[in-house]
Image (cartoon, rainbow, N blue to C red; front, side, top):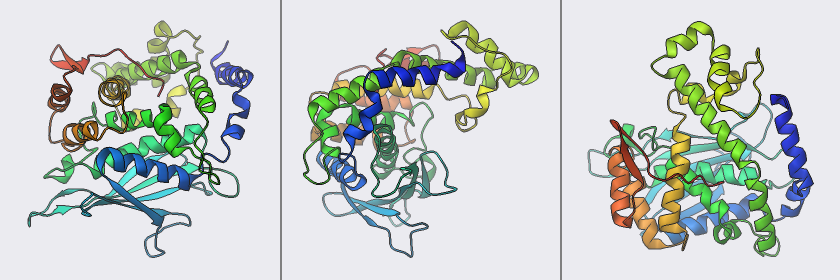
Length: 359
């Protein structure tokens, strides 16, 4: 098996297990307006966050189909705005990303400046109403997790607001949000038939979850390898990687740790844009998977719509942004939930859990 065979063989195996017709089975249950309505219901029940979503006015939209999501608390006070630019169009950036337009911060008059963000994605490549694949649904909820982190953050300075926190923590809320797609109780609030309002059948939920779990070991291996390569490129011995070339450095780091053969002369590193965005911090994705799994299991697994758990998450995980060190944020949250999420390691810390959810 060569590296270029892996994706093909995984696709063949998934198709043989029934994955080929998965999107056809989901048809009708993942229309974007229905998904957003269900997501808004989850946020309202869990955090008291009211989301009002409508087409953006022509004076504010930069492309057809842009939506405007206005967020407010139960008392009607605004906490911010998110513009949703989700539909594919020629020349559009192919990934999914959330950009700040205006950060949240404390103003000199004592009021709080509500943030404004833009969530961009490249979903749907056909005609007609946008229907999400399960992968697109998970990606959307992940990015909405970043948005909610920003909406519910309250910091004095804009440079410490929301996702402008330590790299170790920035992906934890967004990975926690992915669990809403991995739990049938919350998935069925978002995945509902656009005509009948029937929730996604439980047997189809289970098929979706089983399909997602296939090759989770290879997926985890890839995340570990990327983290190791990232450390080689940006760690204490980064000059060696520069001198020998990033391609050769990749091979030397990956070969002892992979279950798949490596091939000389390839340049897989050029496909990983996160090496420049997250230079030296790619490991935070592994941290986020561990920590979000522990937080979900501890606070939300019994009832993913528990308002008391939502209050704890808002107060101790989302609100501080970058104004508190990760150690203090996680210890404050764990002290309230009577669990332990982290442990000291050398002069730093590690997640205290070894759990890696498929989400």
